[in-house]
Image (cartoon, rainbow, N blue to C red):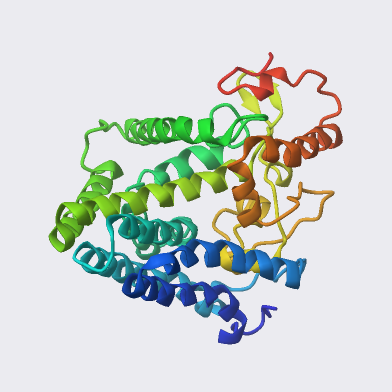
Length: 377
């Protein structure tokens, strides 16, 4: 537990750093090849699910007024991950591209595991960093996103998702009954388009054109191009192919989480193009201790939308009377999302109970179930 009157100790932060122990498994798999490499995604997903079963829920809350200066060890975890991931990915590109003891299938199998780590951990850490106010941390977040060729996620997330979550204006709010696989294909296009439009609108308010050098998309392109150039220099065409594959897996992991976080939850339409304010009820939460260690409290998602700049150790847990709860942590829920009938069986009754609890006055939910359908006036 974090005490607001004194700095947090290293031992308090260590459970959130346990994911670093997954990195030696990547090198072990690359050196030995064979079936061992399947351990990377299996251990990443299942170890923390097992911990959830053993450790149960964490319902305690740190004091949200804890000074930022008292959170050094927690911040250090997110800072250190950036150079560690850079070394891990590009050392793998250099080694695996030229490894004669690995078949082509084994090489791509290994980079599936690398993508699981850069998606589950890297993008999640970038999410924490992009929400901070100082440029140093935002720059670190940009590096992590460039490594999975999804730099526009920062613009989309900060300028679109947080403003329009739970409305048809937000591409990554999954609609009731929406199939994850179709959601994924839709979001790949719509999130990029919405990010471009949001940055264009930002520049227009300053009297600048979308092509102005201050448009962050120029930086995004430069960073992503640099990453691809390094991959080519280290591994040639195969190195680029492996790098692209891990990026695709990482983005797939991200969008599975996005799908689960707000599935079926919508903000009430008030008329005249306006919606109610974002409330804790508009995000699914999971208090499972193990998976929150892995995901640095991302599952306390309602509080993240309430206080986007709040650092992960201070995110608050909400009880069921204030915010809807998932039956399992994200590792199980994202796996279930890959099987749409199973996911609907798990979640649709919960969405219906949520609707009855918070919006009993709404009798026709049809407009809210459709993507990009205007709310009734």
